[in-house]
Length: 609
Image (cartoon, rainbow, N blue to C red; front, side, top):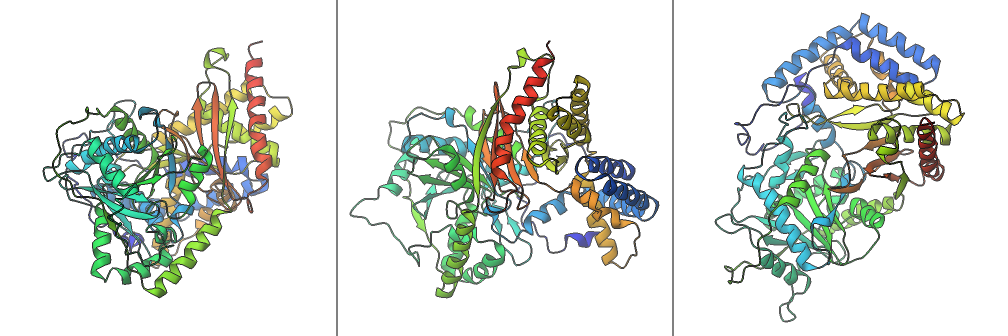
């Protein structure tokens, strides 16, 4: 079992003792084998034909009768070992799955979040950017000092603080097979951030020798020095190729970048650049373009060169409009932690301007790479391929109204309603439903990440079909809401099926690799199970728009859609991303969303009568 993580190195884990006085999160339980098999067979009924479901049921029985219990026992033994190491039974393999991605992170696992910028001055410009940097640096420096407040869930239970490590800087380092995570351990003294401007990267000090954060006016001076350098002091520029921006190489993916970077880091100049890039608390990309939100989001998320894609957290702020975003390398942190971070940025007390002259601060310093001519050609070609892929990524915002809660005949979970609209839209567009992934926050468990809620239930498909035919009843809707609620509860108590299925798969693979002969494991790759876990719609929601307005990520499958959805007081917003050349009837599906919403709410409000 231990060999299943071969090749994975997490580098330095940073200050692991900083939360030792905090309450210990719960241990993630391992679901029972019988429960997971039954749940998968039931879920298959929503997305697979009856004959396939029958085969899945038979395969599940065979797995339970033959090697399934032995695989489960091996996984339980592994879970105990991981628990002693401070991990959950799936967290190492989950991280490994991220770090094994070889293609462009921009077009695979990275996510771009539009931050609600209402807590900043309304006038765009350098002052607004400097205030945001001050607020963000305050939160990041808490982590560098080991003083990040303990998070708790809605019930007051402590949540894992592992995900906060990335707020102290660090980097995902490209490697030939599996990337590694390099942490920063510099504390709060003499810390820097990186500022991207016009494709160039500048190091900007944010704390002094005593660890004190620079004031906003001082930060604004550094930004001004970057975007308006003195005419008699031309900015240094050692970039080998003018049209190869500093961050562009990070867009090409580890398969291409890892061997090039390995050779480049043999040069002292590049070592120095990479060390400082790694130790930046975060980076900020400044843009002077005014665009609509959807265009800003698409470019920030998927266009090469905006930021170093392997930095855990990068921000982007416009000097021309209200745009503000957070780009995340997703391998070590999830959205709920980012929500807390932005909420805390809102709460930062901004001091009044300091009239006294501050102590001298080093001016911004440009960082550059020295690539060989051959490497430049390879990187350019690969980056052009990523840019070409960008032309096949579309992002569109769909807003659908819903009645105010006080006008509904009974309470309906916003999450259940938003997912049900997606199911109705699927049936209206395609005449059938395919698998949907919905992420559920699991940070109340040690080393917790997310679980998957399979929102397309048999009850949801049945209701959608009856609704489209004008035959749905209140009981049909109650069945949908009950099934959704049961999935939420199962996930939150650690009884979801997707992570368990992952554990069974990697355990069986390790056993067979060690020479163990297993029988009945065909269930793990059964067509019905595959249909259930096929993420035609990859969806997630992290609550209302107080902190993140919306966010974008590519679909999990070429013909599918990546969807973030956000509840508003009188509307739901779907931010939908897809590949125009490969998506299945995207125009029809987008049109079906408001139609599905109208059908659902017309039905619900009719129950008043």
